[in-house]
Length: 170
Image (cartoon, rainbow, N blue to C red; front, side, top):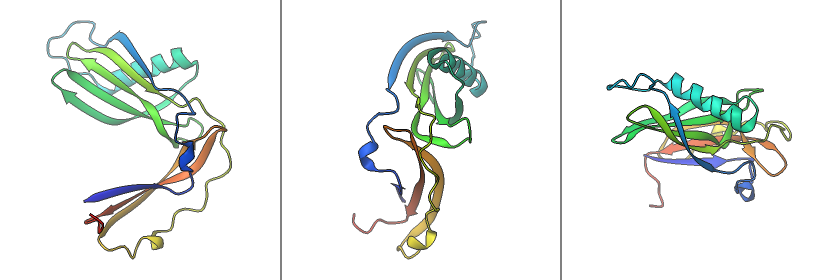
C-alpha cells in the first residue's frame, strides 16, 4: 500500500525551519529515582518532564500529544506532536523527541517546537473527496486541519493522506 501526503494550501517554499530551530540537548532527567531494576517509563511521566522542559526553555505552556513510542535495546524513544493551545490543532513539523536509557533517565531531547502563535487567515474550504474518488486503487482518504509555519505566522491548511493499493507509475 502506498501513502501520499499533500498540503493543499501551504506553499512549499515555506518549508525551511522559519518557525524555530531543531535543538538537540543532552539532558539528565531522572524518571526512576528509586533505581528500580525493571523500570518501564509511563507516557504521562515522560510527557510531564518534557512539558516542564518546554516551559523552562520557552517560558510558555505547550500542548503535546504522544505521536510515536518505540522501545530499543538502549531504551525508549518518545515523539510528541505539538498542538496549538488555543484550538488544539496540530502544527506541521513541530514537536519534541525524548530518548530515555534503560535506567529511566532522559538522556537527550530533540526540540523542534514552533514558537509561532499568530494565525494568518482562516481555514479554506475542505479538500473534496470527489477530486480523488476516481483514482484507480484508492483505499482510503483522510484529511486533517493543521497549521503550517511560515515566516509571518501559522497558515491554516489541510494535510491530506491518500492511500493506494498500487501506484501506477512504479
